[in-house]
Length: 481
Image 1 (cartoon, helix red, strand yellow):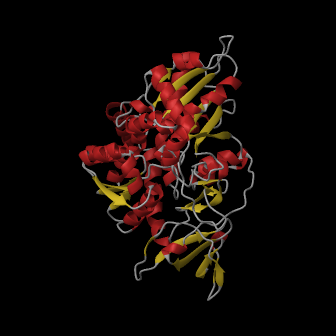
Image 2 (cartoon, one colour):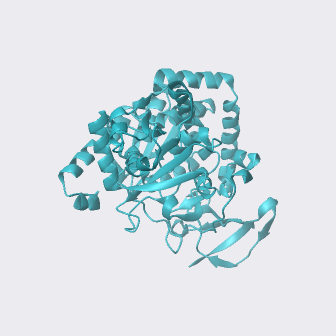
């Protein structure tokens, strides 16, 4: 199949009109929204060199592959970061109608970064409402577990984001963006959630700030994370059912926002999407890494040697990593969800097995098939089920500044149980993927190496799943998870 293109926008503002030409129907899952005068969907379609605007049916929106090039870290220019570009990744591949809104958001975001009053209000909210700073906890028994026969091994510390209000790191970004939305005069917040942690955080922030809250959630996720659905409703949010999972809920949230740009604010919890969304989420989550640097200096007088975080879209990993990106003596390790195994086809390992394309308005690694169609991700941890990933993490992979590995469903379940029994802490299954990688990492580290794992959320929501898994045959259970 093919679509007929109207205009191709070339670099430096030049454009050429094509009348009646046919192009292969291998384009991007961009930001879809209802066209003003027809039942069609207006979308932005891109390759790595051109940006194309056309009118196609929604079913025609699929990804376009882009060749992968290795980029040295020093080539990332400051102006590119300011425009949301990380090497070739990121950008604003969106319909023209959204550009004004995104530019307004970017302008307001840049203002609040340097607004002393806003920053003071945010600092107060993070301290008194969210409960920051969160502890950098020395996991003594977990440390002992990884000592070798000579009694040597690394020291394991957990950054306790699970102790935040709402039980996860998501509230750091949610409260900041909700404050920004209110400053911009928006009355209604719309957001999408998978595991429900972002939904709970957004609903809580809206309740505090007297904002209307609409949460979109996939039907499959609502079944798996019913406790968080109940919490969102208690907090006053309107929870809307979307057939499918997080990627479907996220697409619907974009549509609702695009249809109400004057009064709605789309509160992204993931470090994906068009600029400035990934940069905003990264910036508001960077408090995690800033605290970690300060606490490490207080505890042992230096920096961590290794930072470990799970990776879905990448927001909690970037929250921990960003402060240390320029510290090249600090290893940055992201752990994706290998699901039932990388060769099973049921995983969420975007950086390990994905290819470059454009999805929801930005270029990054994606899970896609030979035709460029998005492949549905799988993980026992709902919050890691995302077919895309942060443009910034994509760049850190290509430049080899960060390392990325995977953990299977079963490895995450084993880690969940291990940390419960050894430390009396029940981590979310998302964070359990990062904790699972310690099994492979610790034997390779020198004695006394300082390892910080981001315990990104609390595992209340996953306790039933983990307990059922323990009682059943692991192979049969994971296949049905």
